[in-house]
Structure formats: structure tokens, C-alpha cells
Image 1 (cartoon, rainbow, N blue to C red):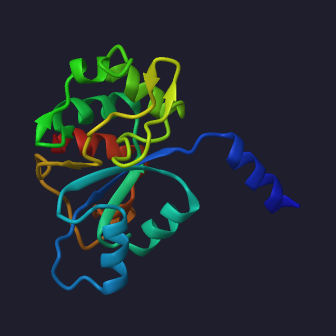
Image 2 (image 1 turned 90 degrees about the vertical axis):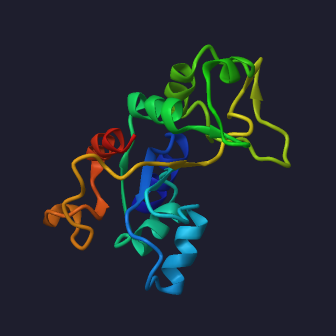
Length: 184
């Protein structure tokens, strides 16, 4: 009975938004880890993807925990990430004008709606119709789903240890926001 109640609760509440950053490179990566990283679209070092906390994503994060770090992203950090590192197809920067074209007043408003669960995805699918609500498109058309980041200013502590052991790998909670701001 307890499992059914928790499953029912998770369908009603929006999923938490998680930022995942790949910290290790390509050498000596096992095939199952490589496949999970590919599904998360983390194909290069220092790339970031924003996902939700679905069970399938949580399972992938458990497989790649020794190659990535992740945690809950907040609206302010997501806004900065979209403004400074968001790219459209053709490597054009994401601007407020582009977001206004699709019904949002600014990138800030879109980021807040995404964090609150009103918007389900950042980037619109290419070959499918875009989800709409009134005059707003519920995603950003032509946005690349991965953000290319710089190495963190001040460096990393260790990419061989978990975050709880004094390193940088694995789950770090809301401390991911500070790392993302150092990598912008």
C-alpha cells in the first residue's frame, strides 16, 4: 500500500529539476557507462544537461555516478546558464528576443516556469509539434539541450572521490548551483 501512495504522489507533484555535469573524459569508460552518458547527452567533459527526477534518469545517474556530479538546480542559476551558455542551432546565443518570439517575457520567466513544473522540457523536439498553452510555446525552439561549460575557476578538489568524501563526483544537492556559477 505504501508503494502505491508514493507512486500516486509522484504523478501529482512535478519532478525536481536536476543539473548533471560530466567531470571525467572518455578514456577507459565501460560500455554501460558510455551508453548511459550518451542517453544523458553528456558526450564530452564539462558538459551540462538539465533533466528531471524520473526513475529512469535516477537509474542512469546511479550507473554514471563515478563520471558525473549532479544536484538540484534553482531558477536563478538556470537563468544564468541559459543566458550565458544557452545556444541555438547554428551556435547562436539564446537571447530574450528569441524567447519573446514564443510568448515569454524573458528568459527569467521561462526558467522560473521550468523549475516550477509548468514547462516540461527546455528544448523543443525537432520533428514533433511544439507543446503550447495559450500563446506560449512550452519549450524553446531550436535550443541545444546541452550546455558547454568552462572548467571551474578555482579548480576541482578531486575527480577520484565522491562529494561526501571531499571530492567532486556524485550527488551534491544544492551545491551544484555554486559549481555551475564557477563554470560559466
